[in-house]
Length: 433
Image (cartoon, rainbow, N blue to C red; front, side):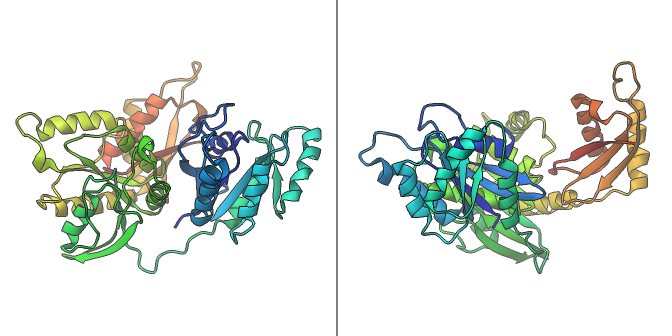
């Protein structure tokens, strides 16, 4: 499993601000009012070539019968059980509080690495105040400022040192993850494909808690299938156990090659599905969309073509994605789905000869040259593919920083038109020649 880091701490110490800095964008809500982060937030962070999942455990809702027992203790215990490393965040301005001491008592019992992070240290006086935190009894203490970023580099270096590069599998098989919201039919699909009751199937959403790995060896095909716990909308994530099954699903996306996003044909694609699509693309994974329960849809009011048109409009700009209409219950097109997954995997790993790449792409560039920059012509002289687990291309040009987004989109479309990359995200780099 991928490395997981949990940020814990009492309310209003700056956990969400630090989380946003780690992932490089504003995802957690930041407010001066304690308890704003009601739902736990998760995302992927990168540092010096190391990738890890970050959990912002958020605050708790003040005013409950027993604030510590009902709020912080539950969050910390779950963080200890699920995370590989814990960041215990405190506030230099307020010093050590009773909640800090109670949390420290819990954290000292774990054998997992705990980094004591003193936030809001942005001047010499606060640096002196932060020394009080040594009384909490942890060996590793880092003084940072979530807002300015001061001191975060040293902390990230310490985290990255714990993240090991996983060894290659003894058998290099394609890894397919089945993802989607609860009760869309993921386990039924897997059982139908394998011809056995490999996973428990019930009418209760969220039955599958942990990712289940199954090796598929039939009809001359061999790959690893992973059925993940259903991913709910955050407003519905009330069970702590269910939330952390979501974290496990995020890890599976990180580790797999191709994701099968399963949606319910009777409901259509929802915002949570689009969040998953975004995560799959950001992590450079292949994507196949499976519209399940198609047998329950009235063909008089909704045809495949109509449904697919709406679906592709919502998936834009990544529209070069296979969409299959299946029924796990009736076993309609389930084997075609696997064939498509293998094709997408091949597209992910496709390598284009440099001579062929330059011949075709430079011709396309000559037909539609890049827009000039301040009356200076932008010339792309050479294209090469960089060896990666996904299609990555480097374009050598005289003005790499001034290639417009619209022209980058044109180049990607040309790569897709000239070569087969359906279902695979394409990444472009521009370097100065």
